[in-house]
Length: 110
Image (cartoon, rainbow, N blue to C red):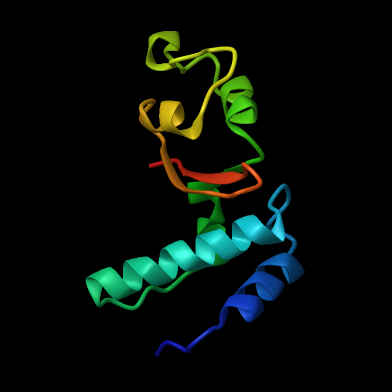
């Protein structure tokens, strides 16, 4: 049996379980929106266990992603290694779910 959860409630519950360390509220909203879009496109309701939060990683900027992943990042994928963009990261196996106007993003680790 599944229950409907709304955007604000989802974010509040994830935050209350203290598993969202390093995640902004905006990034949690983004994750909720992504999961909802996936349900809409597949027609299959998702069961989200907060333990699945580890399947995604929040980053404040492409620079932060590069700093954390510099050993795996191939510099030839970056149009400007000193000033990376989210599009560059999309070319490095990880998938950016969305880009915030504030430059924050959430990257799928799978």
